[in-house]
Every structure is written in structure tokens, then in C-alpha cells.
Image (cartoon, rainbow, N blue to C red; front, side, top):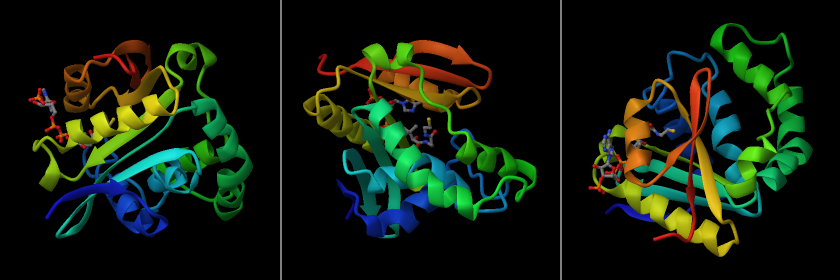
Length: 199
Ligand SMILES: CC(C)(COP(=O)(O)OP(=O)(O)OC[C@H]1O[C@@H](n2cnc3c(N)ncnc32)[C@H](O)[C@@H]1OP(=O)(O)O)[C@@H](O)C(=O)NCCC(=O)NCCS
């Protein structure tokens, strides 16, 4: 049976696996990074620990097949990451300690970018969603996004944003189908947003 439920800390290994298996513009990133945990430390781990996050996992007979994680107040979450989540990781992954593609992620741990207040003004919430190929195209992405939107709206956010890799055309098409529109474009990524509580 496939179930969508709230994540617990015990789901960390499963969500880290999903993160790396979808981490290259939606495709498997395991041969891109030498350390299989770096992507998870940045994109999914903190949401399972942050007290005000919404963290959902899709669980099937083979284990964790996907997740949707988000927060209603991006600025508060980023401050918590600076104060709590990142300091031990910075000790564990010293700068100059990694090479290749890993080095850029380690640099990001040391200099985690803050989301621009212009972006968060109308879209204070943000989220990430990833499903393994075995559960894609079956309506789970939409169901997770609808559930997440309900939670974020109830938590008081009036809009949600997300970032998508420029190379991830399928991801963009999915978000556009769900009513997201482009807010901003940078080299390599697009930021999309949607009001919450709207029909
Ligand atoms: C992107 C992703 C979350 C979508 O979830 P999903 O379960 O496959 O999508 P769903 O089956 O729920 O589709 C929802 C709707 O989007 C549409 N859709 C999904 N993918 C689409 C695509 N590539 N092109 C056009 N429409 C698409 C579906 O047709 C469906 O429309 P409907 O509900 O109106 O009939 C999932 O495929 C995934 O995790 N992919 C790999 C990782 C990734 O790219 N994550 C996003 C990173 S930013």
C-alpha cells in the first residue's frame, strides 16, 4: 500500500536517498557527487528537524518513495538553519576539504544564500517536492502539493515559492500545471510562485 504521511526523524535515510536519486534536475545525481549526503543536508534534512516545517513522505512497499517539505516563513527557517542546522555541518565539511562537484555544495553550506525579501514579500513560504521514478506520473505529486498548500495556508502564508533547475523542463511543466507562474530567473534556475488559499 502507498501512503502519504507526516515525516519523522527516522525517515531521514529514506528522504536523503530520494534527494540524491532526483538531484540532477530531476534525475539521478549519485554519480555526480562523491558524498551521497551533501544534497540531503541542503535540500531536505533540515525540514525534518525544524519545528515549524511541514514534512510529508510517500511510503510504499519498497520504502520512502518521495517527499514534500516546506515552511510557511522562509526567513525564520533560514535563520534557524544559520543558528542550528549549519554550524555542525560546517565543522564536518571544512572548506577546501572537497573536490569536484562536492566542493560547490560544501561552499554553499558555508555561505548559504538567503532568499531575497522581494521574493518572500508576497510568497513567504517555500517547498521542495521529489518522487522516485516508480511513483511519478500517478497523481502523488499533485496530492502532496495540495496537502502542503493546505498546511502552509493554515500556518498563515499567503503565497509559496520554489526554485527549479533551468534544465528540469518536466518539473517546470508540472508546477505550471498546478498554477505556478515565473517570479524570477537567474542563471541556472527559475523561481516560481503561487498564491495560497486561492481556488
Ligand atoms: C515533478 C514531480 C514532483 C511531479 O509529480 P508527479 O506525481 O509525477 O505528477 P502528477 O502525476 O501528480 O501530475 C500532476 C499534474 O501535472 C501534470 N504533469 C506532470 N508532469 C508533467 C510534465 N512533465 N509535463 C506536463 N504536465 C505534467 C500531470 O499531467 C498532472 O495533470 P492533472 O493532474 O491536471 O491531470 C515528480 O515527477 C518528480 O519528483 N520528478 C523528479 C524530481 C523533480 O523534478 N522534482 C522537482 C524538482 S524542482
